[in-house]
Length: 403
Image (tube, rainbow, N blue to C red):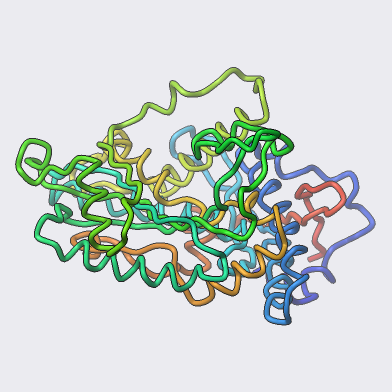
């Protein structure tokens, strides 16, 4: 049975007399705990969006139904030999700023990169990678669309310059709230410290602003770091200013991509804080997307085992570049800001590819199957295991479905 949350077919087939004693998804499969938090966020964002105009209300309705029901199947894990749950079908609303769809789209892109990287590495083992962020001054949220248009024009001018060192790139657009100040003295908070300060100890300097910026993973030639083509952070900022044709020097951040051993970043079995728990779940779900891609596609160049360690060379950078376009916490601060954001982002895209990367990666938003993850590893007659969203408990609980 394929799930379509907008019909009553699934609801009508549920035996509602024996639901309360059914297990929760996160208990049966701890690795799927993120479903609970993302669905809870999507309900809250949907509620805020419903306060807008009719077009926003339609988006809110779709978002409310997004992943309302999940169907899983059993899959044999080739790494452990054990059976584990694997998502088989669901309905995704595809609203641009839906927290669930942003999350699934992010994992889809990470899996795409993992599927493409063996070929990229085989063809270009000499390539090196850098990560560069490009910013502009905060704009009024009502001017966000025009600001993004100007940024896109500036980007085209930038990559056409002779000094541009990129052989290929993936670029994501992130929108955050404007500057934050510390209470009570209203001292400006550096952006890197904002998340560490409790919400009741800070406030927005201007509640009507937005901060659009680019995160980019760029492939460069092996001689980039030693030759005349090397660009310091200051040089990147100058080039970006010239491309923007601005009267101020924008902030840029450029760094070499280095592999990270995420296994060394794991904490104790008992998480010492909610922040640590969120971080480790984030690491786990991203690695699961990578390992799912590895298992599903059997990513081996002919006659050779492709090692995950090669991919982990750029894994940390991809995780940073391919992330939320708009953080759910930012969307929930002010319904009016969210409604205007939705209007401004209509018919825009958050991910762009360029150069040699286009030979290896698709640029579309992906099919529902890609949002779910490859299902070829599920057994032919694995049987549906269904979970429904329990609004009051804010958790997914198993449902008994009448055959």
